[in-house]
Length: 94
Image 1: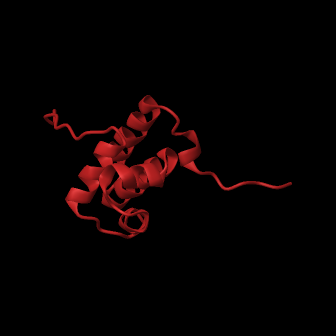
Image 2: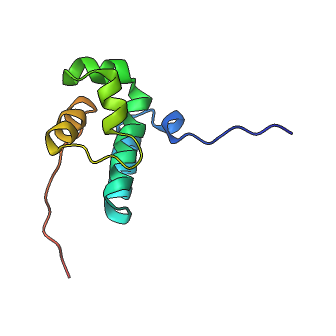
């Protein structure tokens, strides 16, 4: 029996799903998980399209969003905007 590798990008097919995925990673993950999630979302939308919208090259995007990378905040913000996301701050309730 053949199996295929699970790729979350195959399931990020709506803005709602993308938002849920990112919010889950923000709540439960760390910095590297967030960068990987943003990379998965960019992959699901298409790196060429994200590159065009951010003004960054595809190789730069792959490098910035690869495992273990530490992209600049400006890069993350450009990609978030290109994928239709934004950062919002909510007070922490105890």
